Image (cartoon, rainbow, N blue to C red):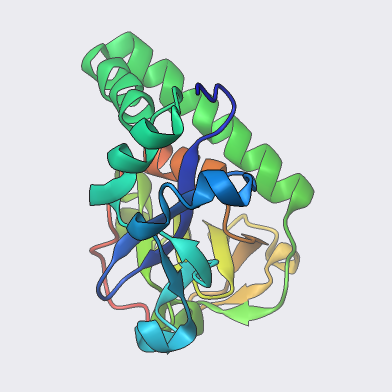
Length: 216
């Protein structure tokens, strides 16, 4: 059996123990799932070190570890494999022109998705940082521009993924800010966890973690 549209995708990220956990992108017949059930665990809040306060995404349900992804894919005849998708990105990153194009396109998609589909709740950057599972800082832009009111971050929290745009420089329109900082605030857009958005963030940020001054 070959499944062209079936795939395993990331369902959540656990900062403490499991890292990324994977699940099927759609429901399959019970008799099919029985073939791979041994590689899955029906996760609940209690299965995580701190409940799910250090988990971004949807941890509850049948999830498998990365080490078991290829076994599940083989049994179910999945052709759109995780390895193929990851290798495609790795190959593009080897070519400077393809890499730049992929990063630019990822940024365009992220801006569109966060700005058009995201919410803008009032929040405090220090609170987001305290409850974050990880924080990406593309090209260290926030680390370098924090005091000047410049830079951007992608913050993973239990309640979603935040796109933070520093907006407190001398000529910034601070009335747009909805996330407080001691320097004057940032614009923050929030989306619920999604495999595609997670992948776009990781491509655009090149998985560069924030290493600047403590945010709380």
